[in-house]
Amino acid sequence: MSLKIRLARGGTKKRPYYRIVVADARSPRDGRFIEKVGTYNPMLAKDSAERVTLVTERLQHWLSVGAQPTDRVLRFLSDAGLATREAHNNPEKAVPGKKAQERAAAKAAKSAEAAE
Image (cartoon, rainbow, N blue to C red; front, side, top):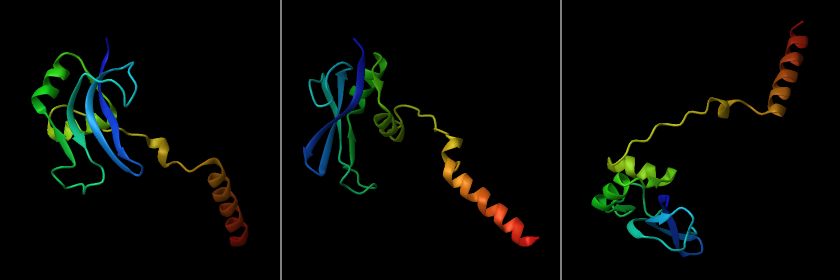
């Protein structure tokens, strides 16, 4: 059985509230879970203490038995000092798209003609 530490959405429309749960990877996002180990309220300010609450003892237990956190939960755990998260680096993200490159080339050619 593969275990995941993930978010289960609650709250109303446009007012999200998440439970941080340990669940079987095959169960639905908001479906059956094994244990609730925290909460996340994205509506609160980023510096608010109630934005993310974690039960650290239980999280350490589940991590020790092999539960895999999702990317967002891993971010919370690294902020709490329970896990390490490697910084992602995508150098291709900053490269302009195909049409933008074509426009830039056309503009450069036009300015080169005007300079001559």
